[in-house]
Amino acid sequence: MIQLLLALPAPDAPPTPAKPGGGGGGGAGFLGTLFPFLLVLIVVMLFMPLFSKKERVRKKRLTALQKHDRVVTSGGLFGTIAALDENTVTLEVAKDVRIKLKRSSIFDVEKPTETKNG
Image 1 (spheres, rainbow, N blue to C red):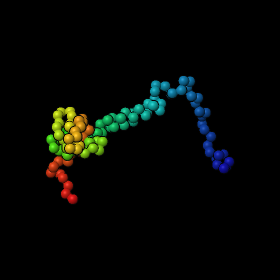
Image 2: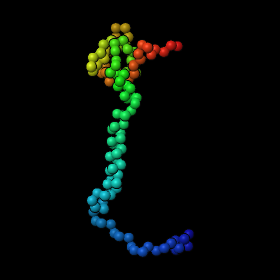
Image 3: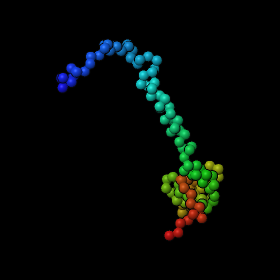
Image 4: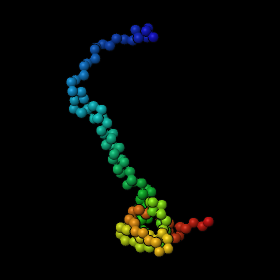
């Protein structure tokens, strides 16, 4: 092991001492090299839902909601749409039991033609 260490070439010049105040000056240190990567990551995370096909299909189905559609809320509640307007939906979850929800809380829509047999 000592023979290996002795066989290594000696450094040409002594290492330069670090500048007082640390950082290397000008913000070109670790944070300066990490910043562009973080910026790209944040932009991708912000715009990712805009390009999601599932999200586009879901929004299209929410705009096409109609009275008597069977739906599932994001909380897992099943019901039939009794009334709706631009921002809210009145859902009938049982006979004569109605609740009012935000339209965006509808998770899935089951049209009458989509009923599953079996």
